[in-house]
Image (cartoon, rainbow, N blue to C red; front, side, top):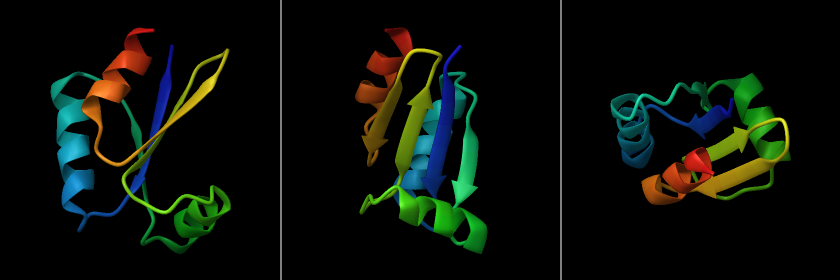
Length: 79
């Protein structure tokens, strides 16, 4: 099973769109609001520039998606 982590904020329109898309497509995910100090420190260690930032893990590999890119997420999830 693949695990999805989304880094973003509540005020980011693309983050809101992504959360809505994930829910509509029945993908469970963990949302980490980077306005929270602990989540922000964690996000900073990833050295990425934009949000939303998605990490998809399974037992074999880790994939990342920067920005709102539902087609890329879907492709990873079905692979």
